[in-house]
Length: 120
Image 1 (cartoon, rainbow, N blue to C red):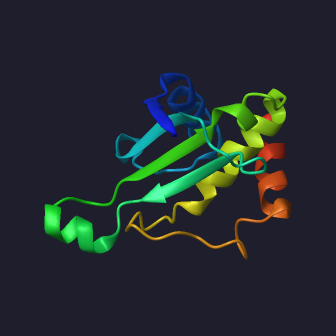
Image 2 (cartoon, rainbow, N blue to C red):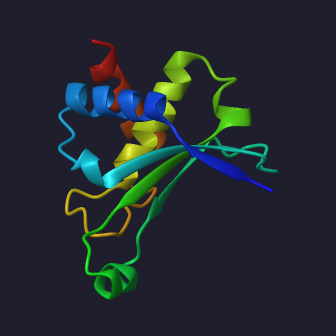
């Protein structure tokens, strides 16, 4: 069974990356968790959103969760971890409405371009 726990370390890195790259997401509505026990061997991280129907039913705005798969993510060098976090941040649209940006935008080329800006 997969176990989840909040990750202040990932939240701090996400905040630093967003600040340096000028990503203006409302990070108070982005939670960061680490999961342990996933059977996935290739997935490094996932981005989850509170669906629009749930937002309406609960009377709340959109919220997102960036989940890192500890077994896979923690083995990566820091640069690859940062690229993974950039990738997940890029899935969150500027409208912050509960949807996702697709892989036609969130692609290796765009992630690498953002990473180069981060590394400057």
